[in-house]
Image 1: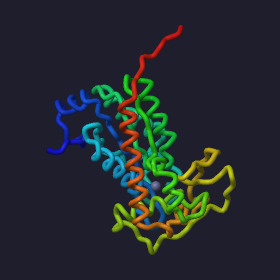
Image 2: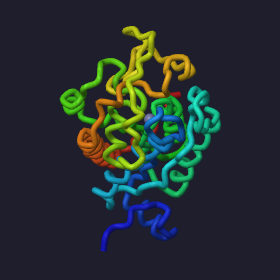
Image 3: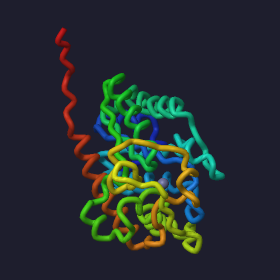
Image 4: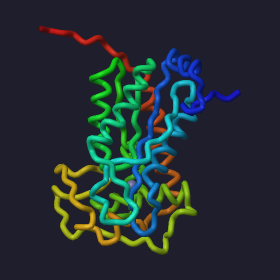
Length: 266
Ligand SMILES: [Zn+2]
């Protein structure tokens, strides 16, 4: 019999057993927001939850897959129809409460898998709060950070920086692979912000040195940022599989991590 790994399908005695086995709850967090004229609103949920699902499926005895979080912080996308924006504090509290509940039940190593660029600061804070306020440790990883950099450089055709930012070559490729039926390539077009510099740019391959986010409609005509016309399903398959390989290793690493006692030096 295959090992059960979807959290919501467990009974409470099975959750108690999963805690005893030191399994790592893996929570994918996406967002519902505009992704240009060619990709669906659910893009960031699909990418993060598929990377998480495939990784947990490979090592089900070591992890538990949580139902994904669909809604998140993205006020800056509201000028485009469809985006659902959750206030920053609400979002942080919501994720922190999920982590605290898991810690309450005895899980000690919790992993957030992020699918949305603007989730990064908020999920980082939520993971820290869970770690500081419970006996568990909680970490966060954006899935695109796990794509092997040599592979990214090999397959990438869009301009650096900016070609891979939002509804871009990377995201569109992965969506073409996962749900090609939801991608409207005839509507995809490159869109690069008029103002770019060595300090101010957006690219998923490497973050800019300056942290800054203004309303998307100020610098994107279409809601896209980057060049989705360079996307292919085959690239998407290789990007996604690379991220899954990386996530399997992250889960194993986090699971093996010792939690040392704190030392009060007063
Ligand atoms: Zn996205």
